[in-house]
Image: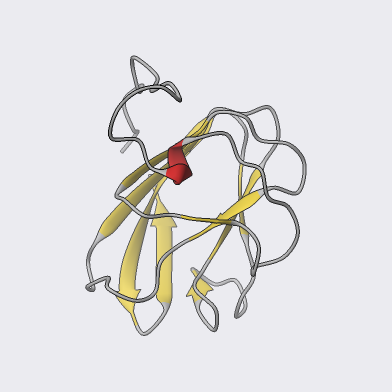
Length: 116
């Protein structure tokens, strides 16, 4: 299943946007990326090494989050501290290609899976 195009793209001045939808500013490991705070997060300015964290607390199993990377570099999507994404090891990031979007499904106990 493919994700339909996201049009029009939200802009920084639009009301209701959370930090996760604004251009990424943080780099480094799992402790510094932007936290994803809603079920649709759009990153519009991604440089090498920047990323976001999927939530751990307050999320119920089977909740979905869509992350879109409209930047020019891959976006590192990290699980919550101590968590996993798919078959990646604990605390390892999923690399979301530039110009793509992906659904992340929460399985519970800090475990996420990803797919179309």
